[in-house]
Length: 248
Image (cartoon, rainbow, N blue to C red; front, side, top):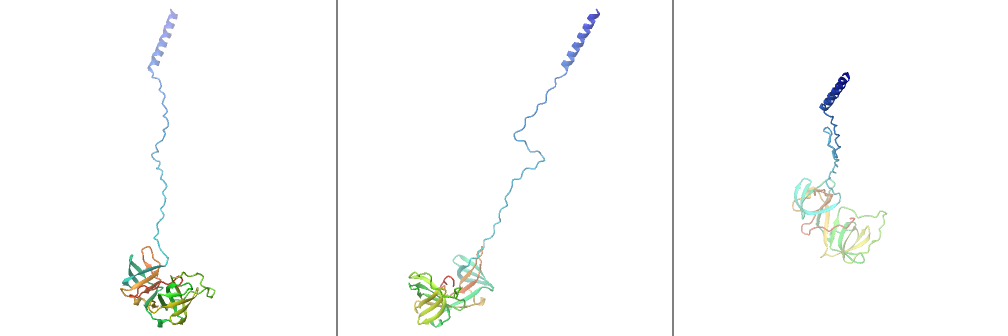
């Protein structure tokens, strides 16, 4: 009888343990999240700033090249002139370094030995120029060789080509002149009917007046303004003076 009571108590304890175990829920494992392919940036992290290139500032174009401008003087404001040209109005600035020259009609009697002359016209095979225009200048001097010698003309002239020569008049024989130039002596033939003779004399700002035809030399800036190095007041009737040859 005692043994039966012990088995009954044992069985009762086992049943109680089974009941208690069935009432306790099983622990659920916490899943580990998979890593994201592109994780979002943290809230406090600043977004990366792409590098920016600093643009190079564009400077205004300027020109230091000596240029020629022809036009009619339409306005005078002190030392600032306004020219009307084929390309439009141009502002010309004069300074103390600006050379001003007046062009007037000349004659054969204005020629004399020692005078400085510019001759333009066709040149023959011997180098002689048949002048269509000559310019007698009171300013300037002919180019002089660095060693003081007078070299022969290194280039053979093209027959009939319009050429120019500048130099000192060393001989006058009627209507035939001899010039001493940096390239050597040059003969100039003058025709009383077909050669235009012009005198060039020094001028001042007071010689300017509206309506004159001017030839201006000097550098031009990006806005088109010309700082004049020289201004020539041309003849109204005969037009522009002959173009000086290179080096004159």
